[in-house]
Every structure is written in C-alpha cells, then in structure tokens.
Amino acid sequence: MSEHLDRPAAGARRNARSEARPCLVALLAAALALPVAGPTPAAGQDRFDEFVASRGDVALTGAKLIDGTGAPARSGQTIVIRGDRITAVGPDGSVEIPAGVRTMDVSGQTVIPGLVGLHNHSYYTGGNGRAAQLPLSGPRLYLASGVTTIRTTGAQQPYAELNLKREIDEGRAIGPAIFATGPYLTGEQSTSATMTELASPEQARRVVRYWAEEGVSWFKAYTWISRAELGAAIDEAHSLGVKVTAHLCSVGYREAVALGIDNLEHGLFANSEYDPGKQPDDCPSGFSARYADLDVRGPEVQATFRDMIDHGVPMTSTLVVYEISVSGRPPIDERVYEMLAPEIAAEVRAIALDRRAGRGAIDPAVFAKAMEYERAFVEAGGLLAAGVDPTGYGAAPPGLGDQRNYELLLEAGFTAPEVVQIMSLNGARVLGIDDAYGTVEAGKVADLVLIDADLESEGDLHDVSIVFRHGIGWDSHKLMDSVRGIVGIR
Image (cartoon, rainbow, N blue to C red; front, side, top):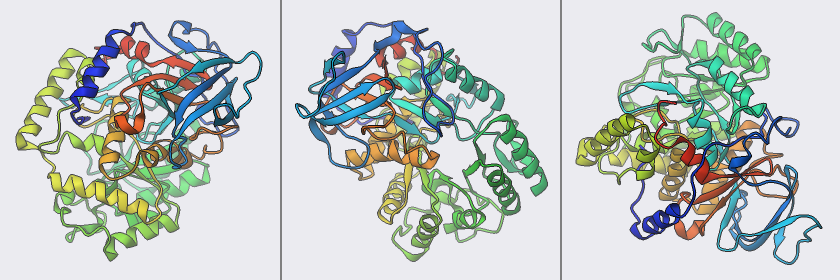
C-alpha cells in the first residue's frame, strides 16, 4: 500500500546518508494517554539513554519551520526547548537563548510538529491477511517516523492495547502517546472473529459501558452496524465522556451525523450514501467502485459536507491503505520491505507486483476521486486529519505508512504547510488536545520532528533524524534499526 513516487537522485542521496549512520536499538516515549490537563514526564525515562540524541534544554537554530498552523514555512528560526515545553520561537538573533541552554545548529533542516495519527492501530495486517499485535516494533516505528501521538481506531485485543499504553506512560516501553479504543462494534452480518457482533442496541450500550470503565477513550463502529445500534453506542459513549468514530457502509455519513457521531474514517471509500441502490441498514457491495464520476461539488456531496461541518464532525484520510489496491501505482518504497520480516515482505512484494501489472481492485479514477473528495471537504470548511491504518495488504506499516500519507496528500493538491497541519494540528483538534499539542509554538509541549532536508523541496518525510517527545530527542535511525526485519511478527 505505501508505494512511493520515484525520485532517484533523492533516493541515492538518502542511501549515502544511511550508510554513514550507526545502528542501535530502542527508544522511549514520555507520554500520557489522555493528555487533558497537561503532560506528565514518564517515570524511568532514562532507561533507554542509548537511543537519545538530545536530552536537556536545547535551542535549535537556523531551522526552516513549518509550524503546523497552516502558515507558510519560515526560514532561519530558533526554537528553544526547556524541560518538556517549547518556551520561545522566532527568527535567529531575535530570540534570547538562556544561559545553560545548549545550542544545536540545524541549518538546512526542517522542523515540524510531532505527527498525530488518527487511524493508527496497535496491530498490523501482513500480505496474507494475518493480523499481529506489534508491542515492540509498532510503537517504535511510529515514533521513529515522527508520529508522537496516535489514536488506535479499533482494537483487536483491547487489553493488549491498554497494557501497552500503560507501559509507554510509565516509561517501560517505547512509543507515542496512545488514545486507546475499544473492540470494533459491528452487526451480526459480520464474519469477523475479533469484533463485537451486535444483536441489539442494548448490547451496544453494555459493551460501551464495560470498555469505557476499563479505560478506552474512543470506540469504532464498523461496516455492518445498524442505525439503532450506532445511535445507542453513541448515546452511551457520550454519557460516559468518551467518543465514537466509524468505518461505515450500512449507515451513511449523513445518517451517522444525525445520530451524533464524533468522527468519520476513510473519506469517500466508506460513504455508501451516494450509491443509487443503497437500502437502510444495508451495506451495498462494491459501492465505491461506482464513484469515478461523482461530482464532489454537486448538491448531494455538498449536503454531506455541510452536515458534517455544521455538527463539527471531522474526517480521517487514510489514502495509503487503499493505494496498494490501485492498478498502476508507483512501486512501494523499498524501506517498507527492509523493515518487514522477510516472509511478510515476500507476501507484500508479490501483491504489489500484481497490482502494478494492472490487476488492482480499485480503479485509478476512483482513487483520484477520493483525493478530490478530501480536498473538496477541506475547501468547504471541513476538518481533515490523517492516519495510516496498517491493515489491508501490508504495504502501510506503522509510521512508514504515515509518511507515505504525506506524499499522497501532496498529490491530492494540498501544499506542504497544509499537509503538515492535517497530520498534526488537525489530529490534535479531533482528540481535544490542541491546547498543548499539534503546533510548534511557545507554550506547547515539545513534540516536534527534525528532518534532515528542506521538506518543501524534498517532498517526503523520509529524512526524519530526531523526534522530540516531551523535550527528549530520540534518534530516528537507531530506532528504525532496532526493529529492522521484524515488523509484522514482533
């Protein structure tokens, strides 16, 4: 899925850079899972010092800054980090660097906020459809790729996820802050062995009550849920102070908005309401394949957008998880194969070759329409966030798939500052933590990413070098090396 556009010169330059960099193992996150009242440094945060590139107060000077607000990039910027906070941001020479603060010259490099992934599971599905929890490699790969906060958006093993979240919070594991979700909520028509197959609205309420008490902050409804069950789940969740998102099919977007949904996943690929044969509470087969000629500026689509915007319902872009199913797309980034376990890499490579040969399940015109749909949603005033969704056919692993989303959103017509905002501040807004996260501004938590390139001219996030999480800078390359060749099995 996470195919990447060929740029041989840049790729050759990166290869030369990588060979010069040492490899090692592991990292740590200083995070809180529900950062409502402000950050709390994780206990035992010195346990992984071998992977720390920067600790203590530091001033980054000479940076090109894309701050996450959507504003144009600014060159020659100084960013002062003291403790776990950004204390000053401004042009070089205009910002006072306090005594005792170390200076790091990052001229020629770009700083962006830590990415906030809105569809970033704790598990991964390889090429043959096997799903595996990734307690070691998944969180490290997210953080190494620049993703400092994730919402998991559907759990196959909710207790495994809650336990992983706790370990990261306590400094016993490496990874981003996690907003954990409960088990998927779907209907009886589902054949999944890992989802809650609801038989009634009351069952939906019971499931939501139980898992909200256990500590999840979001729930995810899935394709065969009925309107009555979805409405009951939303009502119960809201009464308990938690939220609901959905990958829909049996329920249309406007129906879900009327029921009080908090977020909608996958954009055009999950909205069946434009299918002329759609019946209430029924999931029409292959509906998105009929959307190539959909008028995204026509009254039907604009009515969807208006309902979502008027009710404050954001949408999550997950273009990367669909890309491998599109005929004729560019090759998958070789870095993906390097990170995957060899047997998983072989499965994914075979599928990717088949799709490139023109046997993809998704028409390229529909994929282009999905991009157009997301751009039109933003133009109408909608709030768009993004996430990797590391499921499907295995080409969008944690972190690297998020990075590929950056390129796909550029392809969709957004500018680099707009894409950074979608992938950082907008995600923080959906989670309700934008008072402290999502932008590089004085007073915000020091979650930011240092990229060893001019991001706007480079056009991708491959050159992440240091990821700051609550003021601690982690060496991206050492983290990547620590999980190279095991993603998909560990």
